[in-house]
Length: 298
Figure 1 (cartoon, rainbow, N blue to C red):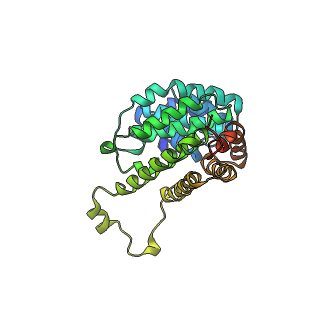
Figure 2: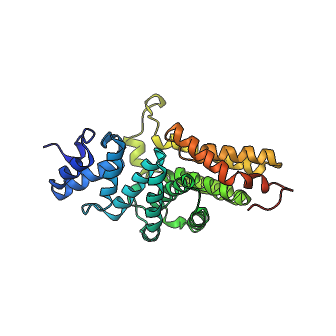
Figure 3: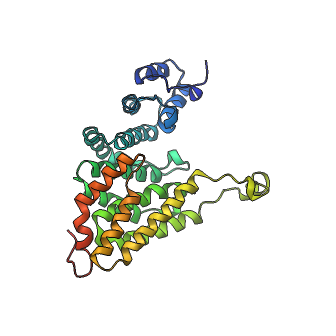
């Protein structure tokens, strides 16, 4: 039998995947379940099957608490991506119910074992689900994001902070849409965060990398996926900066429209359209109300 992590699950439905995992020894079962959580191109092709599968993996005993929470996050992303509004209410409630557990997770070395990455991943998808369902929890989620950003223990951060900044800046951008009066503070914190993440994003054993893994010339360099995300992060920072500089109501509205355009989830055009329209509908009046002479933001 092929190893679980190499198993092709795409032709299966959720029940078949789960039955297959159930027949495997513990380690192979865990590896197979992780494949289904973290590698979306290895999941069943059917949308509803993916959602059902990720839902079931939230209770998979072979997984760690981190893995199970990421199953919740992955399922939430899929629901949001497909603009399933009724499902979105349910999955958002589950994310909010998991907030205390997420807050209590430990900081560790490794992208999928680190509280910092988990927190901002959860916040990002929760904010998008909240937008999709009417922004009923914008205050609670905004408070959570700002608390996490302002209380980061920088002495405990690892080089993986660089990977986490994509979700962090997107989440902060969504908070700025709801709190335009706080955009200066949000922009300042995000610039500092991204700068620090670059500062500590170095291989631990640099001399080993430079001698044995460094390419001999630029033509051999393969662009990291994280670099593409970083380029988009810089665009979001620029949009936040433009919002801090806009003086009149029209300029501020245009600036916050750009923040929304760049920060909402946008795996598909339909998702982006739904979320940007929701942001405009729910928060649009605040973007001009916070302009100089326009009164206080709501």
